[in-house]
Length: 260
Image (cartoon, rainbow, N blue to C red; front, side, top):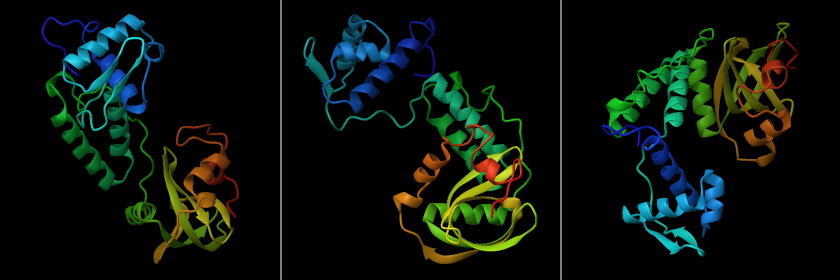
């Protein structure tokens, strides 16, 4: 899907291949799908959908149905693990480039390994190389404490409560027990958003202001009221890159405001 055969134009090859991929994805996520609805979703004519369905059926995909009734992809069919469009490859390249420059050598090494695995698994890997993709991350944040980063990543993954000693922008100390939810990385540095048991509310902490951090050995339950989804909904943000004039980055002191 990611390479052209000799003599094949992009319009007749790549675009159709991506359309077929999207068509299969639509069939996977729907029940019985009418050709008219699929055509509207893919922004093509109904006749094109009929032709593409026939092509997929001829290639062995278990698609049942008929024109005027609708089509259904039988359960149990799946696409190969590594099947990407050009846009998806470029998004991966940019994300991997950022991970390599984020300052965490463990994540940087993992990003290089992911790139190698994805590249090796692509059909016709020489036609579209992740390593040569012209997408770069130009901002390198200040180096964080690698021990702190590792502890936070493990605690988020395992849902473990952490104990930390923290100093705010005015150097006022506090001792906290937090349920870490998400790590953020910007050009200015790293921060962690969490449910703070001391304040009984969401808080965001800059990693460079954490004086000490320790595991408690206590796991926290998945509570919808204190979850990452609840935090994002309250902050009215959609993750890194959202409006930088508000949200967790402002609370963490970029620009500085009180965290207490």
